[in-house]
Length: 496
Image (cartoon, rainbow, N blue to C red; front, side):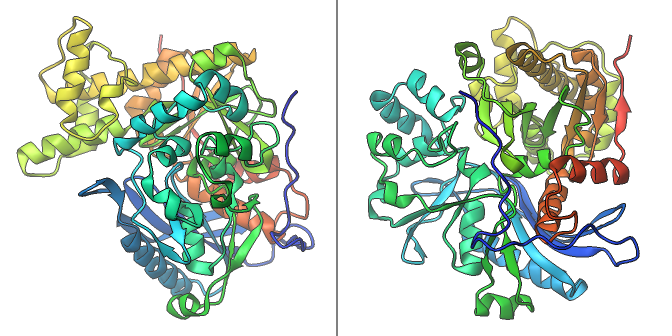
């Protein structure tokens, strides 16, 4: 049995949201607001879409990150809400023609509501409770049984593991993932966008619906799980008080609310034989498919099946990405008491001699705290000695990430029987020249770097299609064609 793509819905309420034909070249580009929240920062962007026009304007950027409370790591959600509303107000001030708002964030984390009130700040996925939850879940449903049901690789922070260890779940009425929680705060609606729901471990890999029987087996009340919607559906209009703060009465439209789903929607992907690497804090490495690969080999290799826009499957492996570099630099800045010029350090790293490699996916480097020491310990465990110079240490990090990417690309090829011809490297990592070249060298494949802002572009493109800017039934390939025309990638080829 294979999973077939879901039809793209026009509207969460059943009415058509498609317009009459593509954008006319003489018309002014249409404008949309994209809320794009990552694990270290958030932005509000204005996106403009027209014939051969795809532009982004950043109107707000703000920090984001874990906050330590007495019971563990959390997100400061109320601060995020204030930043988002202020950013949307600035977007409307600059561009009164904005037609809708789309929200994407990281996956797996959630808030629990009783009435309209949060029971507590949402936990951060790096909180230690996930491992305890995994033990509780696997005691009831072994991982070998979970994988054929949800198609997800084992990650201790997956939502169902967090929920199993969440004592407040018994008091809650509704569970909302972070982008849906933001949409609720803006509109009052309670829904779960399907691409992000697919990361919870509670969505069936074949029917793409909540697996209520699984939820009950692991002690999660099915009533917690809200109705599902697909990218392109209209979630609702801004609440009057929110509209007054923002300065406009706008609809919120579901996009690929898992940021990787939005990013892959904007990946150029010229052919099915093109792999993608969405690289930021994490590196998501894989292929876009229409069929699940639920083999023992895929399970053992840690490959996951997350949903993308239009029901595509993101068959991928999570690799620890530039988190390793950013945490290392943060530790050094703490030692120095001054900022580090990362571009200059990367230039010096490129000139460094050969360095040892380490496993970028080692569990010991997933959590925050003294990353240089953690990495050094992993290197020494292999019998090698880590470089003492910072430039060489940086090169070791980047080359190790690139090797993890190469391993994942090779495994994706073997598991799917796809002869991969090229790699689209999208997101912030596409600006890292050392990483791009190292990935090309270690895979032996051309790397097409960009777009950098793939996530926000994918967010905007889905909104634009929902109002008919590409015609009523434009396929995802038409949206990607606009990306290729307006954001040509930088090509890196293997050396030697």
